[in-house]
Length: 258
Ligand SMILES: NC(=O)c1ccc[n+]([C@@H]2O[C@H](COP(=O)([O-])OP(=O)(O)OC[C@H]3O[C@@H](n4cnc5c(N)ncnc54)[C@H](O)[C@@H]3O)[C@@H](O)[C@H]2O)c1
Image (cartoon, rainbow, N blue to C red):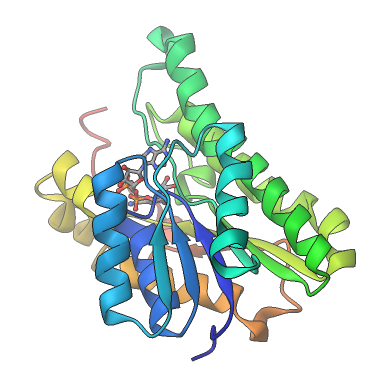
């Protein structure tokens, strides 16, 4: 019950990594405002998490790439639970595309969600934490693709590298308020989306990952919970890669096709 009486806001958490972080937090007593763009998925996820956890979970559907949304979800957390202690801007789009024909509107879409949405949600939550005067936790969702080059993922890679720099850079302005900011950089992780993109996803990544398996969402959630915990109060500005050793060797299963 490390997170009893603590309140978190998590975006893009109807499924995948965000869902698993929310589930673990509620199991350990936290109260969560869970966002997803898909309204029914957000409600289903919040109900499922609430029914099996010790804490509380309410749905707040909406588009996490919108600046006004950032203000609204923080306000909702205060209305529902009286405060905000943790924020996880997890929602992100992975968009593959050839550099030579990449469209400005697609560039904008990726940057708006992966960067702008996370930046302004962090700002809104940190303003609330500063007002509360009891510190806080920001956890950004980067990627191994922000560390290691991959063909046809340039814009995604740029946003994920930028999130690590955001975590480092904001140390200067958040530390005086005892707000830590860190990032997790997942490697290939089994989710509904990644299985849809490649039905052989588990085998493809097993072959190129030193631990001989892609990550499960719970692997990422365990790392996230450390950064969000009281025990991590001296850890800030860091990015933790959780990839079964892939970036140490970096083979890419799709190299031959790209
Ligand atoms: N899965 C991986 O292998 C992997 C690896 C590295 C990094 N990541 C990062 O982790 C995060 C979560 O990835 P995932 O694979 O679990 O997610 P996902 O692609 O499965 O999406 C999770 C949820 O986000 C929602 N969503 C999409 N756009 C949204 C928006 N504008 N506002 C609110 N919600 C929105 C979707 O409806 C979906 O339910 C992302 O930032 C992703 O870039 C994932």
